[in-house]
Image 1: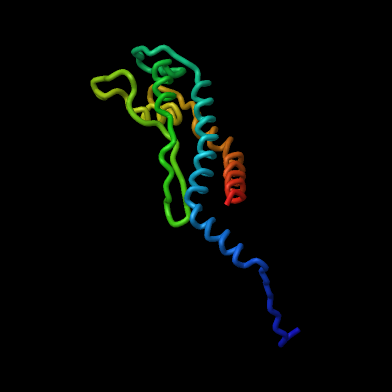
Image 2 (image 1 turned 135 degrees about the horizontal axis):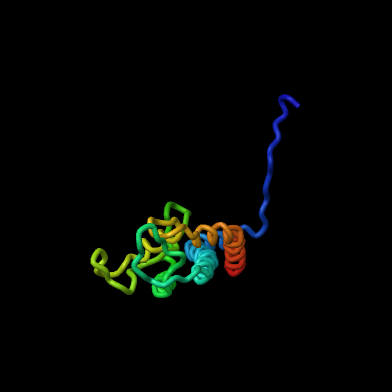
Length: 166
């Protein structure tokens, strides 16, 4: 077939309606993307919350040499549950929308080192990764990995549902 040139042809009927639909979709892209990301983030945040609630509890006490916490004191667990949230959704780069799930604020009890209370992000990181006084007990990463595919499906469902409304 050398020397033969093939071309594809596409024909639209109702071009005006199609262009109107594309115009409406463009006007609603950000709202649709934000809704999809928010619903997916909600799934992951709920799983993080479930994993956090399931963490073993331990009494808060002064530790002796070589001792470690085997769980999370009830008050600190509640501080984390109260501070867990989803950041506002934003456009990270053109056409890419995202958010963050994390912990905000400070714990209930001030200390000499932390007069506003232990930062909740620091506490969550020490539980997740471990520290000199605590063995690692991952609760965020398993939630993220466990809900990843479901979150992707949820975003796809929301986008399809919202596009049908346009």
